[in-house]
Image (cartoon, rainbow, N blue to C red):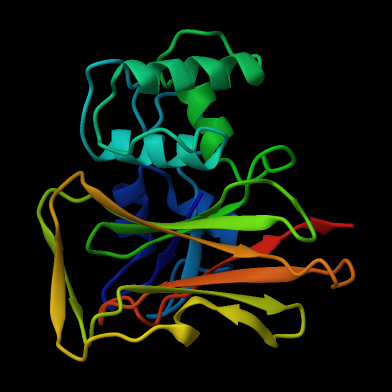
Length: 262
């Protein structure tokens, strides 16, 4: 499932065509009573798979030798679900095939090494979270997909949390992101009531020169940082937040809950 921010001019019919689903499916997932009740800035959950009909899915079978933005998406989800050493390069190489086969073995899916519907469901279905790290993803109309992931499903206090923010271009043309200064991203961890425990940028300095980043079609950029949870804290819930600080996306904040145990 992906979160999508409604833009001026968007309709549910347009979104259904864009994501290969149906208006009814989008309405059901977001508890909408009317197809005309959406508004700019609203965030909708868009399923990758149409759960209300049988037949082909929007995401095709991928196999060794394939390349492109969907391979980037597959590799990003594999990296977040137990294969952090996998290179996100948009090419379905030997190691990507090995990772897919390992995932299929773990989830008792027929082991083919190809990414078919059952494999996509394991990686993208939000209900499959008990044994895999949480992730959050948001797509904007330009085709830019932002994905926030953790490296483990849960942490003990004093563990180091490894977090990643991936921005990938799923469109057919280059995406240009403009920045007000040298900062490209930010992470923060907050207590359940909102008080910030840690913010990555607090002890950083950035050049004040404007800049831009160009992401070619099918390519991605990954930012990874780590923070060690204080062991003296009692068990409690934390939330990880991440932003890509480009002018076009600075208003978008991704978040995932951090599960902790004594």
